[in-house]
Image 1 (cartoon, helix red, strand yellow):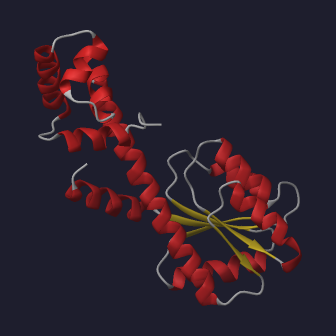
Image 2: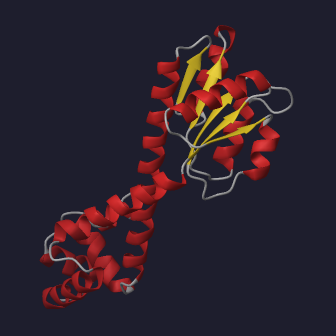
Length: 216
């Protein structure tokens, strides 16, 4: 994805971002929403994890600020559920001192940060800002991966095999031997592969290969 396209994608995501505040305490929800709105964020509040999950969609952009202690589903269970659903929504956990262990577990489950009560307003704003930036990066990476996989999908099985060998750092003659074809045939497959990928150099092809997750 070109830089201009990525900048456009980031801007589009930013326009759709919502900070979700999930807390069973109405006063806390209201005060936190007022704080975040005052610095320019769009905010939605939810009285429970279950209520939040009911409106959460796979393409949600933004982040969630979640209290770890709530009746019913707690913040840790909510974080685990968001991860299980495959939704890329950064979560900031709000915790009391006695719940640090739970907050650490939440981070291991995918939460981006945790904040101890009582917290300074500046600390909360900083955590939300960082979570939103992380969310935008996740969206761009997902878009890169989808684009790269689509490009790789245009290649024939033989062209993909040649690309894999080249990514491994093998010269044409070694690739030819490994695939039981002639060096000239390797060159033809390589040229076709570069054209289909829309690249001019092997390094660009390697970046697409990596973005598609094929190096894992």
